[in-house]
Amino acid sequence: MTTQTRLDSEAAPEPRATRTPVRRRRKITPVKVLIWVALILATLIFIYPFIWLLSASFKPRGEVFDNKLIPETFTFDNYLNVWQEAPMALWLWNTVLVTVLAAVTVTVSSAMVAWGFAYFRFRARNLLFAVVLATMMLPGAVTMIPQFLIWNSLGMVDTLTPLWAQNLFGSAFYIFLLRQFFLGLPRELFDAAKVDGANNWTIFTRIAMPLCKPALIITLLFEFQAIWTDLMRPLIYLRDSDNFTVPRGLKALLDQYGFGGEWHWEIVVTASVITTVPMIILFFLGQRHFVQGIATTGSKG
Amino acid sequence: MARTQVDAPGTLGDDRAARARRMSRRRETRAALLFISPWIIGFLVFTAWPIIYSAYLSLTDYDVINDPNYVGFENYEELFRDPDVGLALSNTFYFTIIQVPLYVIVSLALALLLDKAGRASGFFRTAFFLPKMTPPVAVGILLLLLFNGQSGLINEALGWFGVDGPAWTTDPDWVKPGLILMSLWSVGSSVIILLAALRNVPQELYDSARVDGAGWWKTTMRITVPMISGALFFIFIVNTIAGFQTFTEAYTAYFGSGNTTYSNDAALFYVIYLFRQAFEFLNMGYASAMAWLLFVIIMIFTAIQIKVSRRFVYYEGEQR
Image (cartoon, rainbow over all chains, first blue to last red; front, top):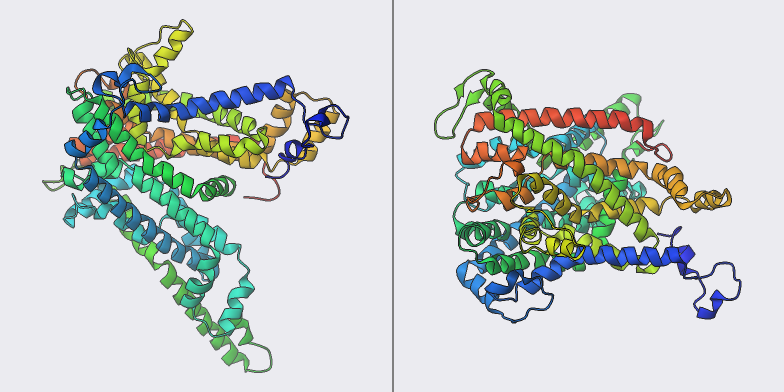
């Protein structure tokens, strides 16, 4: 982020600099004002739905749709009601369990596979790696039904296992991402370790993995978000509401309290807040990694 | 490579050197296969076999309870007779063809703005990205709330300008426009990709354009867009593929056990119909045939896009 910002940030800090003709001045031009107005307007559009949702979750039933920024009657009841009407704590626990298991397993397994493709030289390597990339092109719909039948024949439908266990075998996208990082590490490092008597496993766990930490964090965060927010797999695999993840539970609440005839939208609104907030926290915790990860996806894709 | 030390000339006979090299290569292959074995197992069990089995299922009638019953190409013939497949396809094309260009234009506009925000760009970037963190179920619910015809925020805002907003969530003509507008809320990651690409455009190009007296529009169209065409194309193709498979927001808002009050035909996208055939009506064979049709459609569109892009996309250096 160098080339563009220097125009703005190198400008002299003193306001009077605008009068003296220096090389690069910070001047308020109509164009700049326009840009800032547009930026602030866009920000409002992007942020306001959150504020609306949060505000509505503190309104009593009759006022949910009044579109007022500050609740006229402030109430905490919705949160208590959601906790009573739905096994929210259980859903949150299920989601955390699945999400952590999925993110950790996919990171470790994808790193192993990526290292296998990045470090070793063997005959079928390029062919196999082409297969890895090709699987990314396959729409999920094609494998969705047979995968369900596999889990069904294992008697695992309506358990949490199908939501994460396939991550034990790595995921093409992350294998690709991590391999790129591994390829960027200097090879001499590993050769030196080998001369010192380190075996392949030690080289991988003690040298390659620690050096690749940013990429591993990106993988963890991406998968955490993907699994937390997923609806389709929980829809396919979960039946008993005690096994629901939060998004699946939210859909059930919408069906029951939303247009299911009961019109308790305040419950739906509040449950939406509970589903979303952990992702917002996750973003602020890992903001740098998210941004970096997405930027690299774009340039490597 | 560490193993080259073994066959230093002169120290060992050629025979023994060759054997040692073969040995170490075999050892390396074995180690590599050990490392990639998770993927190999996963690929065989959860990708390769499902592909084969899905192809087989598409030639059968299968409801999970009874054994698959071979019916030849009947499912594929049915695809062309089923009016709901036609409806789902036209809904999906409508959505994708309008949504993808809008999505690219909006993310480009926001990235261009962000690029000019200087030190504050971090703040705005966060604001633009947060919606992307929102679970799609919650996005579907927000759609129902904000676009509600009578009391939604969108129509209230339109009212300030004297516009009488439509019934976004119930009028079949406005369901898809509502879904498309809502989907633009999640442009965040594309904005970040484009911003990263923008910052790689050499400043000298802009400087010389300014010297030549090129205005903003000309500079953008002649320098910026061509220089980031790789990233633009990436977003275009990824979103097209995602558009054909759009599911969660529309399913949340218009399907499921809750909605019994109005027709949801306008939101019946292809993957939603496929999902219902497979897991609500248990027509696994028919749904498998639907999946293969989707695969063919996506392949055709991706191939066309790649072909077209060859003429427009500029890659710096020798990438790809």
